[in-house]
Length: 611
Image (cartoon, rainbow, N blue to C red):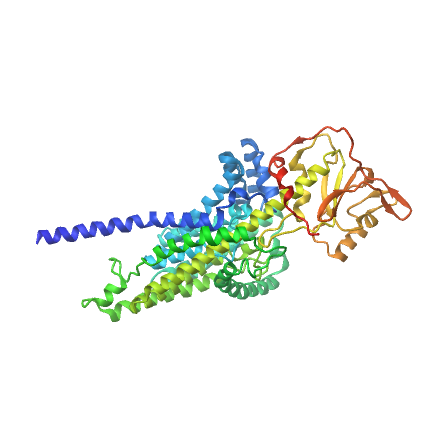
């Protein structure tokens, strides 16, 4: 009798040890998957769009300047935790290792969110198939393509962190802490906020008590929204999108919830085909994916990913009770009441699936400034909140599918199909990384040419690039509206200069519309603005408030797919306007932080302009 008891105790200890080690193994799985799908090419990434006036400027700060910047954002911004997160994480990453260190922090934050989501799934339904499939779906969620964009990685992912912590606290019966976390979510990036309305529905029992709790929960969250609106009104004298009016905002929100939900759920499946078609039929804005990159993906990354995922998914268990009994064991057992056990298993998954659908719908009502049909670029972050609900739906559907195939002894077929699906999502993540890498190369090539062609900058100098037809990948733009914000980050201009040099992208024949009667150019002239609107020139940005002579203007024009410096005078009617000429001797300016990132001599081989 004692011997039998010892055997049982030994089995129990082994089982407990195995289950306690599971989170460590899953963390390793998610960390490796996140790295391959989103960050394995991060050493070739750079700055993109908002990074230039957020991330890069932080890299030049010391601790006292950091404190001033953080205090300023908290006191003057409607999203205080959004911008302070960007500043703080960028500063920390830069101290760890420059731009590489910053990307490592972004990867760490994303991986932590993946693991928090896995632990969240364990609270909902502690079964291997449910938690691991859901966590992989969350990690590889393909509709949002901004995982590697630093401004989103710090400013948006942190809101996801607060939301997941709020769910954990609520389910752990620490409601005060949960409301504190969700208030932080609201103060960082508010589009995640309404998802927390579903928290009371995550309890296993739905009854009248849960209904009362849900009603109280909704009132508390609505009160938070009112307080934050008043706070924003106080800090920045406006509440932004709410100024459009309640009725129009409500109509936009309804449209977003319907179309956004359909787009995100559909594209979660369809994105896998982008990997299959990426080099034969899939055409990007300016180019096909190069064969060398496609070969690396198909030969180097995807086969290993497929084998690893198949090994993991083929060994998953679906538990119908907390004592580690698999579905197959239950079906074959004489001693368990199958009629009662299995319906309970399915009913709980159906409840979670319903809640997941509601989470997807509630991911969109506050994204009032973005289109639900966005599938490329920075605005795909509109779909990021939906990753929670869609991953729960994915976990429920595939768990039921695995269970059914396990009953009919076809488990390996399902596991292999799931492995292929997740492998293709990894492939799509690699395609997005390729876009980020090539976008950075295009930016480096452009600015290397600008620095080579226009080294003679003086007080008041304007670099005007005529009608450049930039190449740009789909998922992140290269050399767009933000180029006018960069020149003062490449060079350190003397503090006594009244009008530091700047660069603008201008349409063809710009000088005919910007010339004043006194032979000075004005980039804010009404005629130029009308011409820009008429031709639809997308990259023209000007905040200049003064006029300048042609003799201090450097014009760079596209010629045979390359930039050249124009030396011949501009002719406007009967007026001849000489341009700034490159002098034989000039004093080079002191270099700033961006110079070493953007000036790369060997990048000249990259063609960044369309012919």
